[in-house]
Length: 168
Image 1 (cartoon, rainbow, N blue to C red):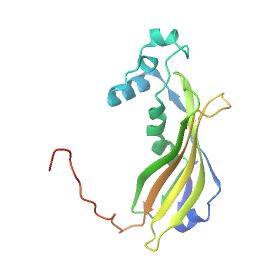
Image 2 (cartoon, helix red, strand yellow):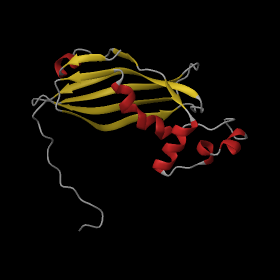
Image 3 (cartoon, one colour):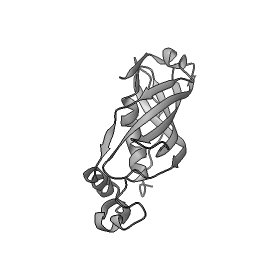
């Protein structure tokens, strides 16, 4: 069940709280292979089932960055903030891959609200501690602190010039 916060003030009151767990998600070879194609990371431990069977994990494993890329979706299953204009990912700290996620297993996220800072303009800067768990395994597969900016309705981000490589 998604935990719903009625604005950034309610979110700020929850600092230090565990926000819960998301649903279990199957990690199959098709998903791993699609990620490999999308990113160009076709290392054999991810995509070559025959070679991976003889490799260090005995089967293919999900990319570590697959876990990172899945975090926004997994976190959306755990909590949301109503009454916002936009939620913008601003960074990740302390990203660690502790153990592989083998093909044909299930993973889920757990989250803890580590910090919320609200500016005078009502923009909230969140730090969420995320743990990616693998079903049936005690040690987490991945941990990270995910940072986001939650903007109230009607506030525009500060305009930054966009520089495209080779456009100067």
